[in-house]
Image 1 (cartoon, one colour):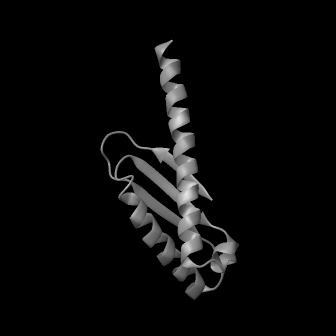
Image 2 (image 1 turned 90 degrees about the horizontal axis):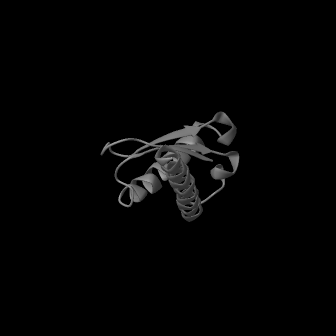
Length: 97
């Protein structure tokens, strides 16, 4: 699950991670965080500025492999970006009226 917001200006994009105890023990939670951090770092090359993203790992992420986590993060990020740009476009149109 991803949450996001657009930040003004050229602030660098930031990712935050929430991996609760329902994901697994400390070793599993840290493994999931490391994998998500790595996948997020790769996506920063495409979105280097203006985003704050929070990733909440669900319990199924404990059993997911690296390719699955990476793919899910990319899909979620593209979905969040579509929603944010649509919301931003709607706000811009509303200001012009």
